[in-house]
Image: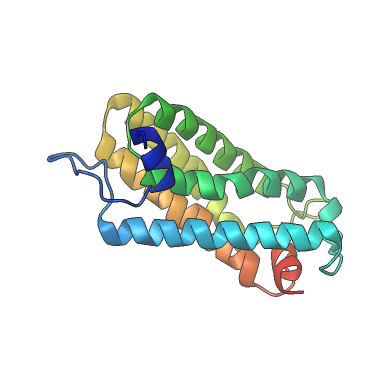
Length: 186
């Protein structure tokens, strides 16, 4: 088995930590990231299957374009973010997929600003506090990476993944009445 195939098949396998760098995650944090990425990814796949196949009850928000864009960009960001955190850092593959992931996260945040804006009244939800968090963390992680400040880069990526992706993801799947919750459990 080639090294690339082994790393793709076993991303959680022990990898040598580079002394003096903050590029690898501690074992417990690796398992937390893996569990979150796997759990949210499986929940998303099941919810999408149930919702799009008609098994789950119809939800009126499925026709709102902001929600469609939001879901279309956040769902691939879940496993991709987990993979980026678990994969070897610094290579061209990491950089390319990292750019895609940040683009998905920013698009998700921008789409979230327009969810519920179909009427004339401005609708602001408490969960939208994650929009500025996402935009600020995205800017900081790109800026830090360009400067070569990998400690700050890693911190901002973890804030983005654990804060701006995981918390709203759990809310989406667990809060009664939300589309992903209805599709998953309805």
